View 1 (cartoon, rainbow, N blue to C red):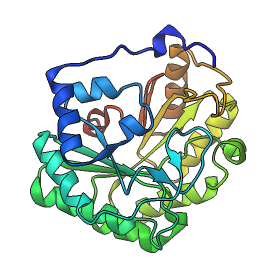
View 2 (cartoon, rainbow, N blue to C red):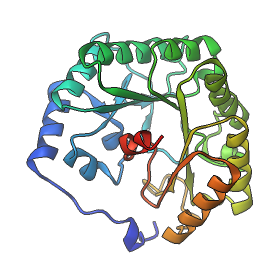
View 3 (tube, one colour):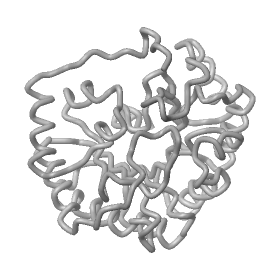
Length: 282
């Protein structure tokens, strides 16, 4: 594995706040994508009393070649999890909660009802907390999308992840057109803010990224994030390019000129990184 550029390295932060976050998560037997996906921003977010909750277990039914989350037989859904997440949100004194999940193609609704229960529990226990969900594609099932929409998250996020030409390599069980239609359907049927994210460094071209921006403008996607792909292990896809910080600025300018309302592009940006700040700018 190639050595990381200095601007992608993050030091370990261990304070009373980070210990508190880990303690609350452990007490409630909760998973976070921060841990499962080896997020480089974990320590910074924990220090700010934030975490992205990973619901429905930590085994995924898909095997995307960029992702560090296990592909294995999924666990049974825990009916107590929605309340546990809501309790952790309250105990952490959050003003913004991000909820994501592994992909659960084994479930008839892809886990949409479980997402909705988590949203309802958070809103019931802490009504002022804003909730962002980052969901899988539910295989494009509109009934599942409607289930989540009815729970009224403040932001509905679904990641495009990469350019169409790399789908077969990076995420063969997903479909670019289906993901676009997923985001478009949310905008057409609700007033919820939509959000999506991409990784760069897998071999995409600038022209391909511009075409994705154009596609996202057509479906009125409100928020777009881009960050550097970092190879989790030697078994995952190798990095083809490390983008320089100035290249993110250039891409952000192009995206805004094309009509993307809000962009958050930087080397260490991840889909839920500084999500509250991004939400407040809308």
